[in-house]
Length: 122
Image (tube, rainbow, N blue to C red; front, side):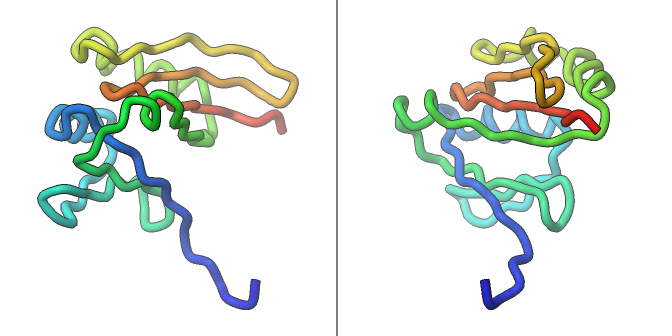
């Protein structure tokens, strides 16, 4: 590349936009409203994603986001303590699994997006 990239962000959809917005705020993401149909959820200036008020079942059910974390045990404990998988009908939290490359846990959001939270082996 002959230019300096600053960030990379994915777009995801929402079956129920307001519910998804509430879910991501409770997860701890900072919301930046961009319009009445789209917002940016971010961790910092480089890490974030766009949530849109748009839903296509096949798209959402086949979308995945990987968030690398420093400590998967802390991450899983935090996700579990928030109880989002008990509060939101379609949210599912899956325990940490071991792989050759590292460890990860999984969470489906209210629209079916599969989040991977992973820690690579050092």
